[in-house]
Image 1 (tube, each protein chain N blue to C red):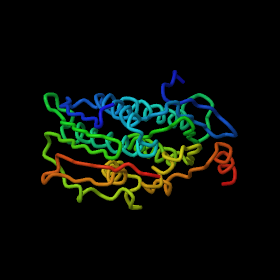
Image 2: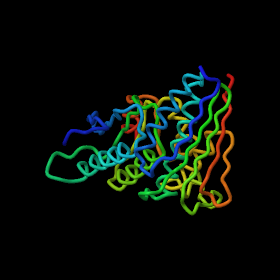
Image 3: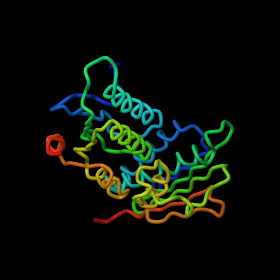
Image 4: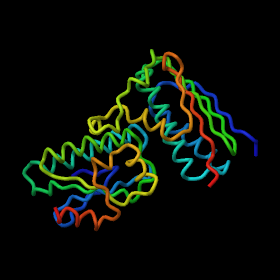
Length: 138
Length: 127
């Protein structure tokens, strides 16, 4: 088995293309011995990141692409997902856990990404996000 | 009611019991279908010529291992519609990871989440 799995693809802005990427990722998480809990967390974060890039970043426009890179070994996961949109300021996204926002449908994905991985950083204009997670040892 | 792809519907003690069929509610088309089927349930409960089902709805998550934020949004829309019809909604039988998802997002303040379907049905009766 290779000591590290690497993924680097440009995908068209079609939401249906997310599931096959996640399926590959889940296979690799199992191969590298990541727990169900960690796999769930990475699954959740990556699905949100990729779908946000396709839907909100590129607005599903034909001819636009999302660049997805992932690296995984038996200790660490990292990924960068970039779109061709104008970006956004994550600090401006309303807190979906605030009582006033509970019944609103926006902002939950961004919050979940932050919750499920150890580090999330956005580039200056907000159209590229890098996230990482270390395997839990318990 | 036409064949449903994402949910099974039963009626127990005047509660519409909805069982989610899929382990992963994730693919965008699947999430949209789920939302449509859930709303069709509410619409069939709120009018029409047929027998009226209960306004109360229980969603059984027994089969679900992964639930995306898009799917959560569909549940929020459903909750608003159920409440507008004078009903209530309960969720039950969640796997720990899915239950935690509702805690992280504070949505356990919006939804009453019970361990078992029987407890959830009983909670309607006690209201």
